[in-house]
Amino acid sequence: MKRIIIAVLVLVIAGGGYGVWRARTNKSANATTYRLVEITKGDLLSVVAATGNLQPVTTVQVGTQVSGIVDEVLVDFNDHVKAGQVIARVDKTLLNAAVASSRAQLERAEAEQRHATNEFKRLSALHDEKMISDSEFNTAQYNVDVASASVKAAKVDLARNERNLGYATITAPIDGIVVQRSIDPGQTVQASFSAPQLFQIAGDLAAMQILVSVDESDIGQIKVGQPVKFTVQAYPDDSFTGTVRQVRLQSVTQENVVNYIAVVDVPNADQRLLPGMTASVEFIVDQVKDVFQVPNAALRYRPEASLMTAVMDRKKAEWQSKGGPGGPGGARPDSARGAQGGGENRGGGENHGGGAGGGLPGAMGGAGAQRSMLWFTGPDGKLDVMFVRTGITDGTNTEIRGRNIEPGTQVIAGVISASAPAASSTASPFQQQRTQSGPPRPGGF
Image (cartoon, rainbow, N blue to C red):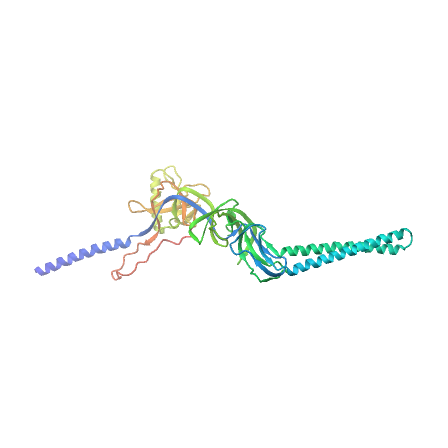
């Protein structure tokens, strides 16, 4: 008998312990764990991102007007040159011969001119005395005119050949630095159809420019004088600044994408930036200082419809009890309906028409206001909502304005583990629970 009583007591105690364990298990299973982020305060920039290449402001390609063998190359890559400095010479043998031939032709033409002039003077006297015919006199006049034209042609030919001889000495057209050299001594250059490029000289590298390709959807936000910041791969930890100097009207279409070129002036006093570097550019469209901001994920988060309805009903009851909308003397709010999807939600939680902010005291109304909601858990552990108006965004964080916003406030950005129905007694305790982050939402910021 005693053994039976002991067995019954053991079964009762075991059953009670199992019930406590089962209750705790169900409570834990019904709990929801949220991913939290903080509201912070600081500066925020709204930017348009693009890429471009650094280039010197002035770049001159140096060629040659004459053909021949390169005798000397007097400069190399990275050499600094002055305007008028000799940088290369082409063999002058044939050019000197051409000049000598032109001079001989000129001397011959001048001799023929003198002979024709003397002959004209002699025949002119005879013509005055009626000793020669008019035809002979006109022929003498013609010979003088032809000789004069021949002298002029010979002078032009001599000047051309002398100029070509001068072209054999290649000089720098501007002050700058040699960034490209395409010839070596002994190389033959041919200038029959176009001047071959021998050197490329960049102007003062203390001032450079970036040619930035901007998508047509963003070009409307780019203005002359707009500040710019950018980075280059050579100095990933450093940020450089510049200013928009020009937005070119000519479009460039690549793979059916229309782009425009924005020219950005860049100071480069220390000459750390080099021609050809790829720059990741951010055009500063707008900026604010010392404002509240929150990660965009918090503005995109929405709880399940049942939880949202419960919170909105509780809020409505609180405001009605305080004489707010829907209370004594107030209009009936439609905010709960709008918060559940009555209003159109456009990325980042912005609500238009019947949205969560319309008609609620915590929302800042006004035509065209960008309104959104931030969800958090109150001191009692219950889900609650904060109505805010959004400002500019940098793609990661967004400016928020509203009542009772405090830096450091934890708001919900997602769900780590969601509540689920109690598992059956036959379910495996090692079965992984399914997580959820609320109903599908439109695209965010």
